Image (cartoon, rainbow over all chains, first blue to last red; front, side, top):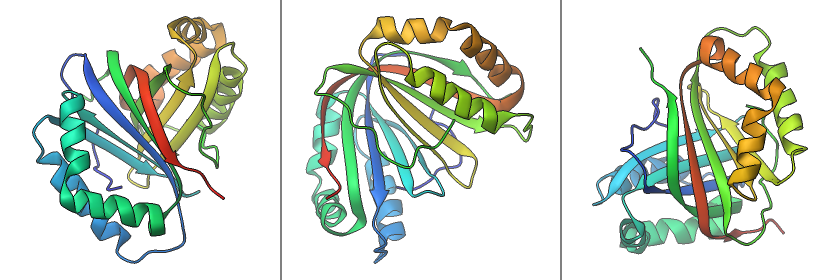
Length: 113
Length: 113
């Protein structure tokens, strides 16, 4: 979806990740605007923790959003404007996609200095 | 890391996801070759289920690998050649990265026809 220029800063686990992977169709019709809008709306939801997104030159895209709990994920999935975007995604923008809901159990890494 | 042109086909949950998100340095020195090699080696490991990877034009990269269980993840992390790549990643290739280990609890999507 949208592409923030930085990695997400999340609290200590446990929390939830929604891993959305997709291949686009060649159909554009407002895709970028929708993606920006959904990133903006989603990030305002109660329980939203962060978002990371990338789409490679081959058209494969990965967006991972982080959430406090399953309830926060369910509330965002039910959002009316998001529901319309999900419908358009299925019918128009995505040739294929997978949504995987996962509980983050541990995390580590290297922070930029 | 490497960029397969297709989405991963994974079995029914539960299984594990390792979400690796990164920002590259400007240092190239064999990065692409290492990434290809690690994708190849990792995919031969016992318990490997699939890999999805994308890096956007802004340099933010996401690689998600899927595994049968925590034991399979631990064995791949200990692989000697992978250990050297991890060390070079920390010292040279990545300005910043996060590794999140998560248990996939449910999944759904749309398959390409």
